Length: 589
Image (cartoon, rainbow, N blue to C red; front, side, top):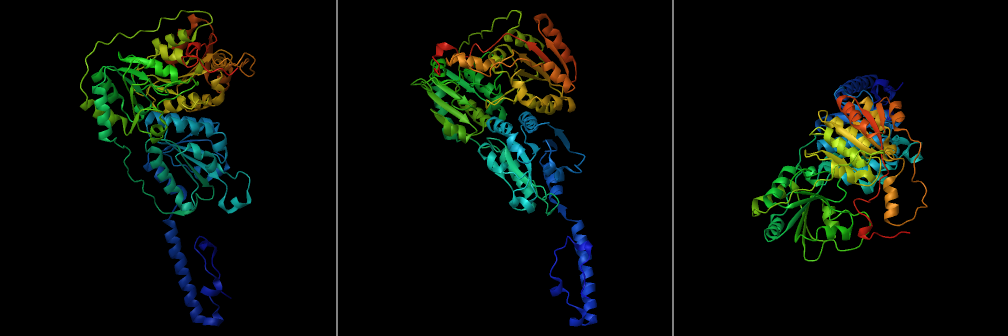
């Protein structure tokens, strides 16, 4: 009888028994006995080796640990279970009830820490339900390492249930997307993805992992060090210096990349040396310059002619860390008035390539600002005092300006705002003044659903700061599940809901562009934000009268639990991103 391979050796690569182990009749009894003894010793040796061989799953957790990504934001499904089983005790799983919420919390966490966050989503739903969060991460330069499950490799060709083509779907909005060709390549792909996500401009990467890969053997992977900063060409910066020194009136436009490159201190020092007027980029997603600073002049408008007119008095404009420029409504005109010198310093080759005018310099914003400051001549000039917005009156219903003026009085100095109230964004900009770095985050892509999950992630990243999520009653519906995650994660976010019963920003744009009044789908009656929040286990209250607003907010700040305050306000949307009919908007009627 030929030698039978024992069951315990199943993991060892088998060879054909009739070749390796011929019968006793063919080689004789002694030869057969020697063959059996040799085979048994090989099995024992292989078993000892296998005890020391790690799996793809084990090596992946080591790589994540080495990269500092021990918090997993996820929404699990069947194809993710083999990875999540027996999760190491030093890892934390933050559950989102929807892929958009899970990835959105990771986005806020990554932006706050300026480090990559790890996301684990479910199969094709990762691209279906979670794509809007990936688009947000793309435009916000948020470094996310997103993994998603795939069907078992052994049956993918049969198009089984839950087979995923997510890699192809997400490619326009991630820096890199792949499904590793071999199971043992998964940890290395995650390490490579991390390096790509962290290289400026930062952004998301996407890795699809078949569910049977996690238990396969794998060699260790080293999470090696690498440099992230790229310095601008000194010769190009010298041209900026010469233009500044010859300028009679200079404006600086500040953008979100200042915070990405930790350049806030350098930019403030540069502005003060030059005594230059400082503006925020159009539709600012970050506040990159102190709001109460004597040099700050507010934001520039998001349309060509109004923006050019706003900057017409300056002979030199330097854009630091922003596109040239982010527009919304189409109002044709010059990018900048003729004769004005325009420079852009950006960490994004994409923004440099898409700029419609000026000279672009690519490099680290902090290093560039420091270099320019060390070279330019100081400027002495009298700076006019900033004009503050008039104190809004207490009315019934309340104006959004009144709501934000009351909020501003109660905010801690180091508070963080996560904003998504499009129709009242202008009022928030006027009345809320925060000067600390990392104090304001807003949606860059225009897709609703950003602010609530981002607020939870921001709070998890900054447990000692207080996060306020200012969100419209329409906007909140796009990622409402974040309320549950805030409660379960013990993230004491204050959700301030601006409740006007309609899409006021949409109404405003309708009137701004003369579309006409007969447009469906703009009113959203019958939504009770308080009951929704209470259903998720959150403390919530509605405020209808001005005298009740301050006590309600004080109560929310005094609590160390997540809470919601829904404030009934007057209908907004009278202006579109700060613009009215005087800018001659397009007519879509």
